[in-house]
Image 1 (cartoon, one colour):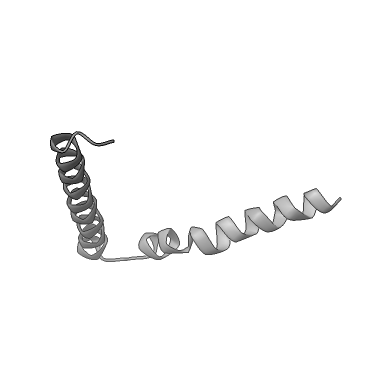
Image 2 (cartoon, rainbow, N blue to C red; image 1 turned 135 degrees about the horizontal axis):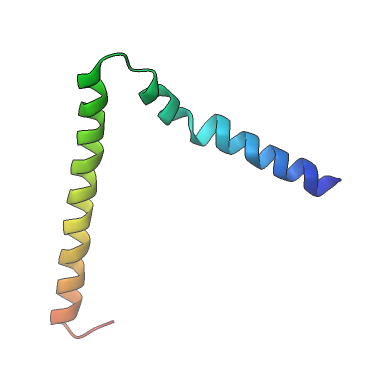
Amino acid sequence: MISNNFFRALAEFITEVLFSPYRTIRSFDNWWASNFFNAILFALTLILLFYWLGQLQKFRKANTE
């Protein structure tokens, strides 16, 4: 019984808290606002990817794991 309540609480937390930004994006009526938000997320992902690749290259040149 306790595990059932735990999983229900976990499901409620995920749907109500973690998915709330997606509900906000879905409610945008303006196409440009939605795409601008997606472009920001895409740019942030690219920046973090290139930072990570730079760090990998730095460790590879230093022969460290």
